[in-house]
Image (tube, rainbow, N blue to C red):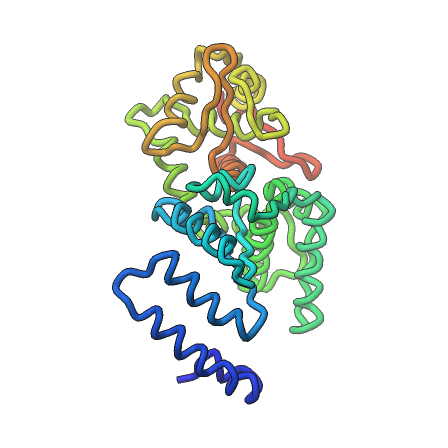
Length: 319
C-alpha cells in the first residue's frame, strides 16, 4: 500500500518518517481533542513548513466542528505553532464559519472572495472546451446564447459553471453533437440538477412541497432568487412583488406570498434567513448556492425562458 511518504523524495521521506510515526502514536487515542491535534501539528511543523487547507468548511457545521476548530485555532495561536490553516467556506465573515472564542478572530486574516464576473465565468466555459479540443481532439462549440445562459444561471459561482458546461459537454459527446444550441442545454440541465449537492436538492424539495396543488411555492422561491438585493444579499418582501407578478402573469401583492416567505425561513427547509421585524424584515438565501439552483429549476420547469441569451420570466407558464 502506497503511503503519502512514498510520494516524497527519499531524503525527505527518511527525515519525516520518525515524526509521522510519533504523530500517529499521539493520535492513537479514543478521544481526539483540539489539544491532541495541536500537538501533532506542532510535531510535524517542527520539521517542515505546514499548510493545511480546509475546503467547504461551511458544510460541516451540523457536526459541531466549528467550535472544536475554534478551540484548535486558539491553541495553535497561543502556543505559536508554525502552522497555517486555510479555511475556505461561504459566509459573510469568520463568525459565520467558526463559533466559540471571540479572540480567535485576532489569529485569522479574513479574505473576501467576490463572485466571479460574467467574463471570468465565460473564460471557464470556453477554456474548458478549448482544452478538450487540444488534449482529446474533440471539438465542441457553444452558441453565444448557450454561453450567456450558462453564465446567467451560474450566478457568479464557478462550480455551477463547471457543472452546467460539463453536463452540456457530456450530452454533446454522447449524441455526437459538435455545435451545441439551446436545445442541448435544456437536456443537460436535467442532468446538472441531479448532480447538484444533495443538501441543496433536499432543501429545495422541502421548501416547495405542499399538499395543495395551487400552493405555487416554486414560483415564489424563483421570485426570491430574482429579487433585487442589498450588498449583503438581503431583500425585502416588497422586492419579490415585481418578479412574482411577471412569473405568475398577474398582479401579486405581499399578501399572496408572505406566508411562503415564512415557510421558507422555517424548518424543515430553512432556505431563507431573516433579520429585522415588521416593516424592517429582510430575507436572504441561507446558502448562496441555492439561488443559482433555483434559477436552474425555474428554467427546467418552464417558468423562465431564454430570449436573446438572457433569462426572462415565461409569463404564460405561471398564469
